Image 1: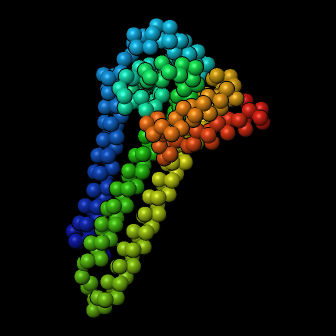
Image 2: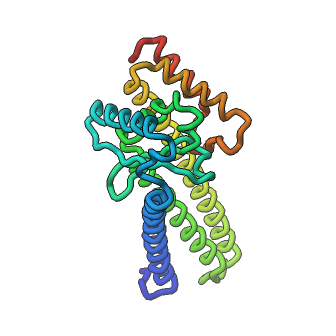
Image 3: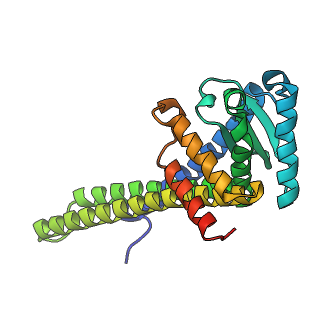
Length: 267
């Protein structure tokens, strides 16, 4: 009978402790990162961006926010105007700050492509309507937990592999431990790979769903598709304006999905 005071028992206790500690720590770090992101936008961005983009454009943005909020019966998000050059790599972003939805628009985007503004806002509203920012955070925490668990289990298997056998068939036990170590490592890597792929698929589905909600808000899936295609023409060949394929599907694919919806009259 295995005792908790045996070396293997202590190793099991330490392993469970490492899993819990690392998962909780990473969870706190993720939440801290979210809080710092909100603080960064609060400090570096301007909630009153009328001087940046002009009072007319600023009022137009708020008019879109008021209309979209009323249509989906949600709290009006806080609006931030971002001036930092790095943040200008994307037109807008949606996140939660202290439990309240927030949307940021870049100064460059409002100045250069005002005709696309309502489509970007509608898309970001789609994320809020689907509660996607919160869902993505939970998925990231799940991936972190799986990764931490995999690391500890593989480490434990490696330690057991190096422990001397109690019987005379040491070589056989060593081979068995080696086989278990390799199988467990391969299985855990496969699980981690599947969770990563699943996270990417969920993120892509979230973008397609946000496009669909945005099309409903602007009243036309065709116009939404045209806006996406135009944005693809703008970012084509521009590395700074590109989006990571791990979080965003191809803009062309998103436009084609909306075109199919328009042709099938699903809206």
